[in-house]
Amino acid sequence: MTIYTIMPLEAVLDGLNTEPEASHEVWVNGVYMQVQPIAPGMGKIVRLLQCSLDDYLRPELTPGSVVMFGHPPTT
Image 1 (cartoon, rainbow, N blue to C red):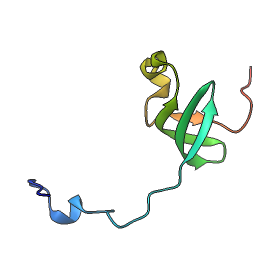
Image 2: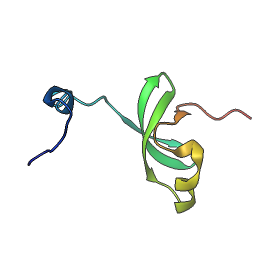
Image 3: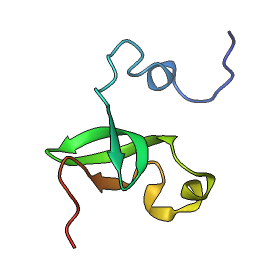
């Protein structure tokens, strides 16, 4: 593979040999998603795994958004 870039090689290959952070698959409000834990019961969305097509258009479900999981929603 050939990479043409003006970035230094150290910046391109930074983190290549490190293990990715652990992720969890959880249900949040009827959407099955992969999240990266940031605090107990809180996680950052990595990707949606099982949902309706309309859920991809919801701004609160975009990758990088923070969601609460692990406890029932409050009303």
